[in-house]
Image (cartoon, rainbow, N blue to C red; front, side, top):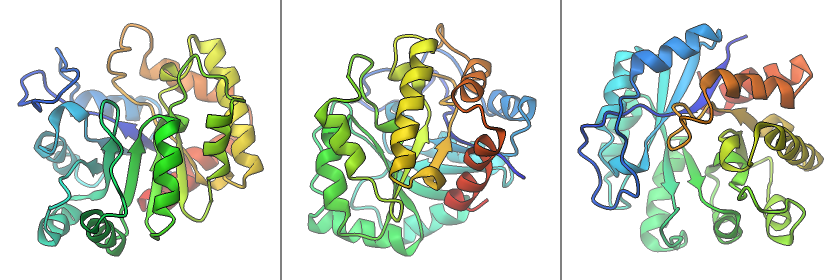
Amino acid sequence: MYFVDTHAHVFSPEGPFSKNARYTPSYHASLEGFLNNLDKHNIQYGVLIQPSFYGTDNSYMLNAVKEAKGRLKAVIVVDTDISKETLLQYHQLGVCGIRLNLFGLEPPNLLSSEWSSLIKTLTDLDWQLELHCPPSYLLQLLPALRNYSIKVVIDHLGRPSANQNLDESEYQQFLSLLNPTQHWIKLSGLYRIAHSDSNAIIRAQKILQELKARQMQENIVWGSDWPHTQHEQDTSYEKNWDLLTAIINDEQERKMILGENAIKLFKF
């Protein structure tokens, strides 16, 4: 059984960075560093996610994917007017989806003609649309995406804030929209949705119970979120790996999330 880390980033402090970047790194997150973490934890494959501070310049990440020689895939950030020819070239490089990081932005109209055209192309390529946004945005975006057959991947368990009561109507409404025929969800970035490791375990276990009740157990994947931008002092790859075991005691269930589910979604 192969395992996959479905969410990590590589970058350099040298840029160039997007003029709209809300944060820029002061250190390298290298390909070598990521692969070393995979090797240490007996993880065969990984998925790199374009960091928001690079905007639509995916070159640093794609160079890493090329250097990894088939071990990594990538989720990129693009403008809606990108050509089919360019997307096809990205496909040949190992790209499998695009990401919408909407923190600090307004949610787009996914039913507009430009988005409709782009999503059709992505669907033809069997790519995914990855959403990184708060639950309030998901309540707008997921109903619109019902009009398409594209796979939708939701980052960091839907990004409830650490202070948000998971029983509140907003998060429960988000959960009620999930459909295993279209949606996938990442068990990742737990330090972004909880105030402590013990709290993260409790919150993640509660969310996983809710997901299983909605027949989503085969649509959950795990990501380290390495190198844990803006939380580097609080966590580590090792700690996130250990959290997975603490959250999911059953070894077969962990293997399904790390292996079967991720391989099915990312087609390694």
